Image (cartoon, rainbow, N blue to C red; front, side, top):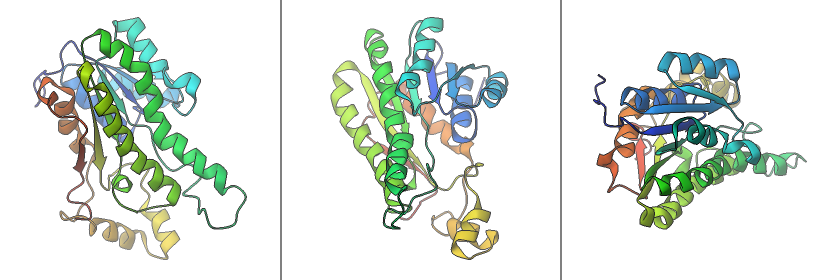
Length: 259
């Protein structure tokens, strides 16, 4: 029995980008709450390791490719009979935050790559999941944004893509409400994951890693870097029956980021 009980018993959940960091933590929370969990990602070894730890089914798939993006949903339907919960967690910096105005030939490709990695990776799996959710009488879609979903914090490409997640969330919530499918967005603040490198941030800004981390901590009211596990209770709530009246919402789990 987890601290959440088993509110997701008999529910089938898919977490994209679920092999590490935030995705693995959310998958762990859903599994602890009783859900049957499928996780997807590109690194087979990492997927298998996490799947073994949390009793999940691993599916190797690249969510940036339309032909593969729906594969974890297809596997969930084939193996377990459907899907009730989809967590769209894939994201990151494609091309290392390209400066659109640097005059480099690759910045246009970088812009499109960031949109694909941070926005369309939420659309394609959702499109694949909705028919099964409708057949099962409803469902939950939980998109994972970031601080850049609500603030200008990074490059134009990354910020545009992350802002787009909120627009996608709200429009899907509007369109799918009649099918008892809720769609919400969780926006983490600074998180202690391997995608966050204060050493690299310090090098870019001419600071030490300690100074870069302190600057990040000072951007939130709680003055700290959060742990991925702190997102779990909110994700479970949104995925549960208790989350039924919550849709089209943006939930900041960020320690009071940039209030």
